[in-house]
Amino acid sequence: GFTVGGAYRDDDQGASNTNATAGDRTDWNIGVRYATGPWGVGIQFAHVDIDAGLAGGDDELDAWEIGGSYNLGPGIKLFGGVQFWDFEDSANIANASPATEGEATVGVIGTKFSF
Image 1 (spheres, rainbow, N blue to C red):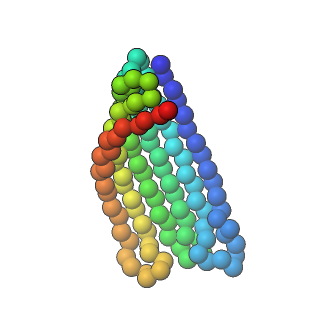
Image 2 (tube, one colour):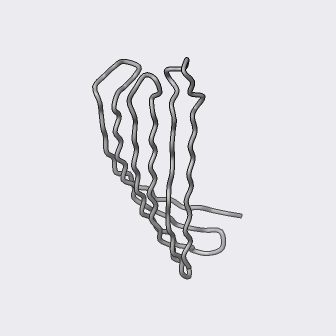
Image 3 (cartoon, rainbow, N blue to C red):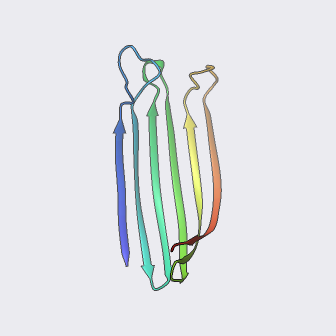
């Protein structure tokens, strides 16, 4: 009943010595889900790191998600989850504002119909 998955991406976003706005972006995530009968639960972690290139500074995002689902019947699934976000911005290149950071908690609930 367990499913494990993950992904990794490294993108230079067209960075060069003449392009001060581009920099490396690295994303990765990993998650695990357990399903038994009509029930499913899972947890996932994601991390994003964006380098501002020659302009300097890094942005980082960490996100956790915990969720579950229940199959009501063929083609009908209820799902819900909670996401926790943590963002750090070392510098806003566009207007040179001071470093910022933010946190958010997001709730998701829905119904999926497949036919």
